[in-house]
Image (cartoon, rainbow, N blue to C red):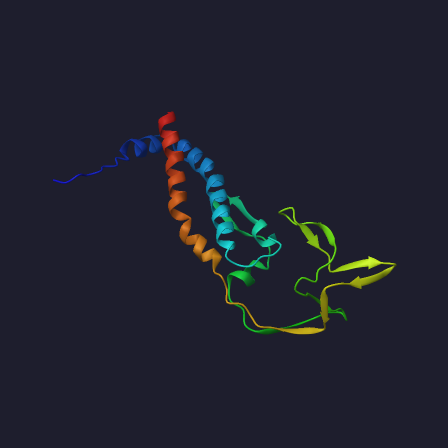
Length: 178
């Protein structure tokens, strides 16, 4: 007979069955940990695409709803990075213009980005007039579309194993505590 590993869950099962509150305590401690794990994994997967401001990555949150945790970016633009988009026309609304930064042509700052870098200002006031620097103004543009990065699907494939390990830790903690 070869080497075998036996994992006996009978003690844990018996203890948790005897005290359903213990199981609920374990799950209650596990949910926030699993949520933060999910946030970390999603943000890691988001690093593969160009996200100059980091706002989409920074908007990723976990919220606990009953006995489940819902994780994802809160920026509505995340879907355009996750899924492919077709080529389309973007038009300015209400007689305004689209502001498109030119390579290396951004001058001035207006606050800080989430990572501490200065936020570029493409429009600023000078002598009572609005001045545009390093930008192209257009009424409409033809967007070529995007390929989609599927970061949510990749993250979803990475989350179950470490989340299960976290739950096992919490159950062991509860069983050993009694």
